[in-house]
Amino acid sequence: AGGATGSPTVRPFKPAVNTSRPTEGPTDGPTSSPSRGPTGSPTSEPTAEPTGRPTAGPTAEPTGPPTADPATEPPTAKPAPAPWDGPCPDPHSSSPNVSYETGDIVERDGTVYECIRAGRCNLDGHEPGGALGEAAWTELGPC
Image (cartoon, one colour):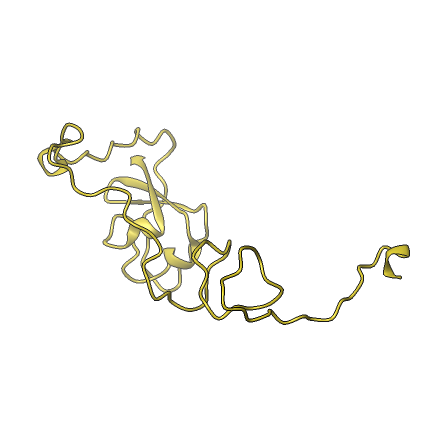
């Protein structure tokens, strides 16, 4: 019937037959006992029993040499940028009448900076070389 058009044949649902002995293979419907194997997809509810055992426990001997303690190594110093090779730019201004755009270059305390985030370059506390300045400016080198 449905095979001629390529559509599957619809068959009515047949409930599982309740027998006194367990079935050996798949059933036609749901069963009253939980399955013991994986389902291929996560379940929506927790299981009553653990689903597996840990793959390994602690070992009596170390499994490899210890790693170096990062606390004993000195911190890496930030490399100094190369000296600025252009003319010394205008000094940075914190005046509310000055608005910086991405790519603007300024000088502050003998160091040249470029605005990298226009929305932050104009915020209080985001001055070049200031506490929050790295979020808005990048250091290009001494002037």
